[in-house]
Image 1: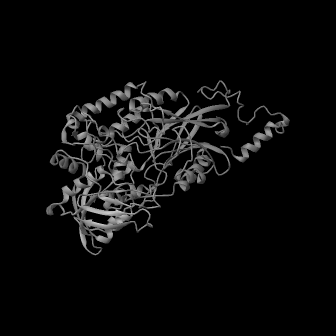
Image 2: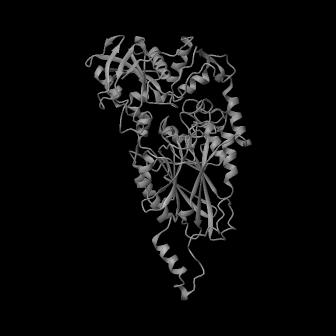
Image 3: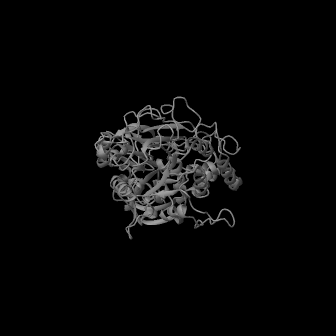
Length: 581
């Protein structure tokens, strides 16, 4: 990043027109011959120029153990085995050297794997601190258990329900600093967490700005975030960058934004980048030297033009710690300015050939604490039941229908709500039930508690409400919303309910022929509908649920699913309940 005044002065000095016509210092960027981009030392450039590396990742979601598949073949054609907290830690330490900062772009926690989520993600924070992560943007999933729980994760303290997991050892809080530059308390008008973090890297002050998508209001249970507001990201990024530059003298600035995009190439390419990150880059000030994004779980490595015509890296490294990004800047130590023409970035796979002993010990400690609970058999399936959030969230799936069936099962009795119809969003179904998947030494087809947890890790409550037939139709029409980040978000529906979906029809007119047990749904008739509290409160922009009345609370979704699996032996994949035209 170059200020006009400094650039003019540097030109003046380099032309020998100042201090009696003798200039001994040039502000021009080092020549290619002077630079050695793969070293952390300063000897190649002298004392004037330094290298600063920013190591980053996003959407870790508590994936502590190396159990994940490779990236999709179109992202990694070599299908390299990747991931696992110990392997990620080892790679980060290998590349850190003496000239790097390590940061995250949010969704470190929430929607987590069993080992992390069972302990309200305290294991993940401990592991990230051991990795040397110094700062992280908050992601939408950091708010899954509400604002107060996010603040506990930052500052420490016993969990309100579970207390301390180790006697006499309260959770100490995160060493890394969570950043929430666009999240404000509605009452006080103050940020709930800092907007910026500054650290010295190789003699250079580097400023980080953390932001989260305002769509968080529709991605988590509204009750948990009712006390906060989410402001425009670009506006807050520009304000924070100005403050860093003018008040703190920080000229090397990186935005960590939990909002993203998608591209069509491999993990280290930038082919037809699309999504909110494109507009954000255009609106974020040229003071910002690099942008690290997340949220969409995509991987891309782009160099985009800022609004003054300069070039800067705009990157994302995918999800679950399966890759990380190394962004490199050449910086003038005297001014802090980045020589932008030399900025570069690379996504690197987290291969499983090296490990970190400290993170291994952390994971082993929590695995021992998990004990036999994870291996408890709670049901069995006769075939694969598939269709979770890792696939196409815009179509009806057998797995989402099974969860909808479980919700109906748990709320059908009159004393439990008397539900007639149940809905489950495909995006909230976080895993499938696979017959040959063995997680804890169980027999083929058996479903363990851990596997059930992976399906429903969020801790939502099941609720029942009264809804008009017309409101049910509006909910289904909201499966398509052109203003939403993901325009198509499908619902799983319970047994006995059917309808027709015609995607060729205009928005708001795609749903017809709604029936319950073969009888047409009437617009003015009232029906008992059960779903998750997340959806009932308008989550994922399914705002028509908010028209429901006579709320009846129910069990936690995971507990309800486990009891359903126990009560339904030899579970198989249900037939389609939506007729598509």
